[in-house]
Amino acid sequence: MSPSDQPTVTLPGRVRMPLLGFGTWQASGQSAYDAVRTALAVGYRHVDTATMYGNEKEVGRAIRDSGLHRDDVFVTTKIPSDGVRRERHVLEASLAALETGHVDLWLIHWPPAAPGDSVRMWRQVLKARDDGLARAVGVSNYSTAQIDELIQATTEAPTVNQIRWGPMLYDARRQAEHRGRGVVLEGYSPFKSTDLADPVLTRIAEAHGVTPAQVVLRWHVDHGIVVIPKSVTPARIRANADIFGFALTPEERDMIDALGGGPRGGDGNADIDFIV
Image (cartoon, rainbow, N blue to C red):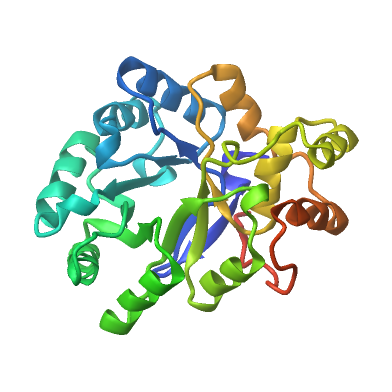
């Protein structure tokens, strides 16, 4: 599958977000630059970074040096929770480092702890979107109740909530809560909470001639969940991108869902767009 044919989810404002993204947490300096260059070369068109990662400059340089048009790469960055009352300054610093003109998605990295600060920050994040500095805005590491607080205060739901997610963390109810509020679920650290040697994953991988890690990533995509694996190893970066040559059967997906041990079923079909 070519990068232009990869599945996306459509955010408000007709913003198309690739379901497969490339994470850059814990990558820094030349290593971060090289990893992003490799990722873009093998077909990723979505790169995730954050102010706290300290690698926005390298991520931006890698995107420019890739030769790709800016509009062909979906860029996410995040504001730390201690950025409250400094939101515009933090975003402008991110844009200066990235040199991308705007970001496609700007997230609040963690909910601020002080009462009222989450809503206060969310209002400023919405303003940055309205001013054209971010095409879409959302949150990360928010509970459903914390999302509801933002909706009740502003009538605007985050477009995305980026949380830790994987087969062993699967929760159909939480996925349904996101979908019911129009919030796209984005999963990070897909392998950290996953036993890649689990017999369910290894059997399914063998049936498709792929690796358990590729099965995990395909499982996210088949659920309509954005996933951002990270690596600085070229072979793993290439393997993690190579998940569009197979698809899980409904039975295989259900078997993987069951690894989470939570409530089953009933979350409906994902709203996925395939660009053709």
